[in-house]
Image (cartoon, rainbow, N blue to C red; front, side):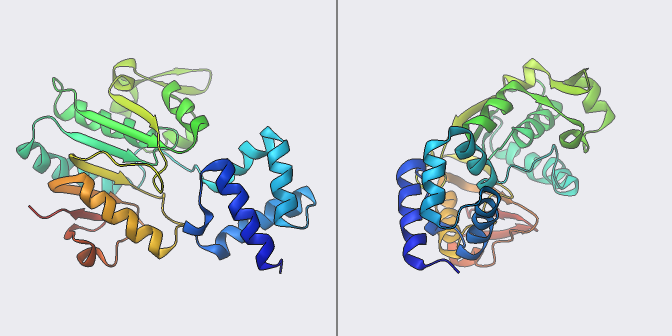
Length: 260
């Protein structure tokens, strides 16, 4: 295994370049992912690998994509979105007719657009605020473009497909009105300041490689960003085991509430 000094130096150089602190990520997974790329490029040390990334913009971009694992689709885990539509959103709407929602780590925008479609069906005359953030500017550019492939599209009902998309050359283009309902922004969850006053925060399939300490700090910050009674929605493999210690109360599986 490569030496610790080499790894520490790589993390430091990478943090200076990318503003991403790899100390917040589980070292075994990160080292495995990075080693895979290193062997692909025939590089033996982490620092040599950094020097390669520093010189080659295309390789650097590929590395960032590889690190931030942008796997996404509309209505990911459809049964959870059904609960969101049938129970969570109606309850939130009784308290606040115009919702303030944050999709954190939105990747190519499938999650915030899924939300916008649900809310337009539920409250056609209200424009709720949906903030969608990600660290990866390339992903945000794709999200703003609103053009999708079959893979991302698979969970969309025929009704919503015909209402909110047009098909062109094997792609699906999202309706301009749905597009206009999302505010996309670049944001680093581990470094940047959080807004507050959210009714609902979604952070799903984002923290999978974070250390327990990084996750704990992040969920505490999410709690502070929610209104009393606000809801946190996490991914299907990301149950918050210490949610009570953080200050949440249990609501539904993978949904947590900030006490009133």
